[in-house]
Length: 401
Image (tube, rainbow, N blue to C red; front, side, top):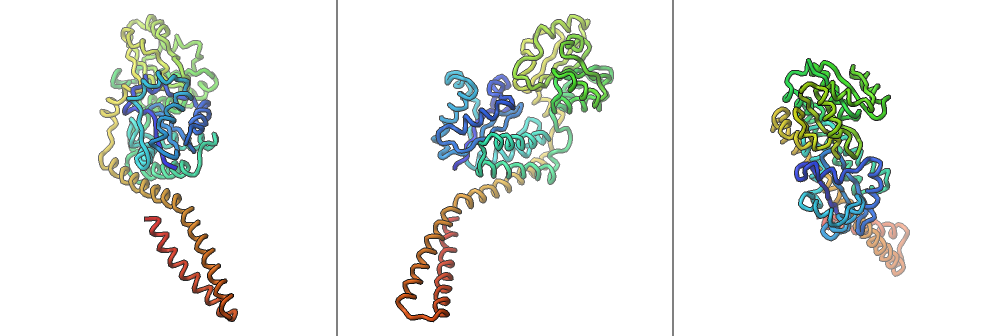
């Protein structure tokens, strides 16, 4: 089987394109099975985050199966061929060692918007588990992902790539401080209680934020997170008051649609006496209506707006990046060697079986022709086995090379 990578990421596709392919966790198994059932595809796994949607597949022919994968992906996402054609210029396609190297760099945090971020390694582990549970993972992709996870762990334990602010929540706080200045006299509202917003809430509190509000569809979860952060939970149907009170709103829910509408923001601004409002949308698909940007005194940022903040406030030292890249190179080489051994093993086993069959037949033939004592027969058999093994050793090495 050959390795094929097809997908979108923040390097080549803006958020309005990435969100078109975004899949909720509940639907991922169905998409995986649809991809695995495409002609020539044996295995499939998907790394889906706010900044990437990448399909990894084990196929019989990477060049020949690219079109089938594109067609299967479009069908799985309910897109016509015409609609999906709009993504063509944004799609990332890699094959073989290049695809493996990309996944290893992703797991090591080298390909992230925030280089060295902590969450991506867990997301690669999740991709492995989801594919296993969906029944679309085999030995080829299983070995690839296990080795990628090893590369990610080594990068974080053996280099300084993970030092400093390493979550999008922390980047959001940097953005809020850049816009509003000191947060000591400000109030923030978190909409959604996933991992990103929990990290953002903790970073806000550590930055000296005056008051934190937390809203979620499930009020009990909002209460639990608010209590853990020293804030106050807000009922989802009372968001209007929370928006009116807040200076910073960070939105990151799992909803595949707009959660904060333009009308919601306008209604809140009418009660704020021209106080500026910063809204940071960390969700893909976006949870904040894009046209809210046009409202006076409202600053709306989405995932595409974070790049400048990351470059300014969260740079990673070049030596740490170089050290992590070296680890990735080592792990890719080890994976390719494992892959070669895995591919050649059945041939070597078949060769050994054929050679053993010939050896036994020749020994039996000579034992039938010549009167030999049992001890001589054993000596002849041992000699034949030794010669066969020596010849096979050279043949096996030739195959490996």
